[in-house]
Length: 229
Image (cartoon, rainbow, N blue to C red; front, top):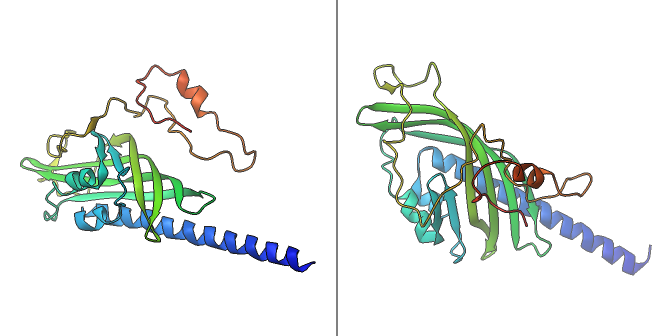
């Protein structure tokens, strides 16, 4: 092996090591979000987002723009009630880092349980959906640039973990009304729509685009769905 070939191999290994390190740091970022949101730790959640002007947060109500939009959403909720629970586990994450190592994309399952206290009792439910995230390095630290959660289903458990005298058996969002979104949401992928949240990455074995675009085009649903690039 020539010196030039050796240097090329060392450079390749260094790049691979850097990418693996970035992936682990991004995973920690996403998992930290899951832990912080469980008890609505607003300051910690907001600090996970970049100061970049393209920052956005998309949830059931719609899209909140900029870090101030993120702040407006998370700071409005009283997190001091011990009956409050918003456990959404970050699962099965797949991360792809751009070649320049400055940006990345990720896809995760979000699954967990919520308990939202109100005047009439506590609403309890299981929920599941898809997180799609875009990450950016800011001052050499990975942060969220865009975070989107498509909630696919919710369901009230037959027997819950809230004391019977406090549990509300009818499902309602009246106790958890978010502020008005900058861009109201008009699309819902919830079961049983059949909609597949788009994958930002190609098939890991074939390298081909996956088939969700064609399958989704056959569905009679609204078209505010996120587009794949």
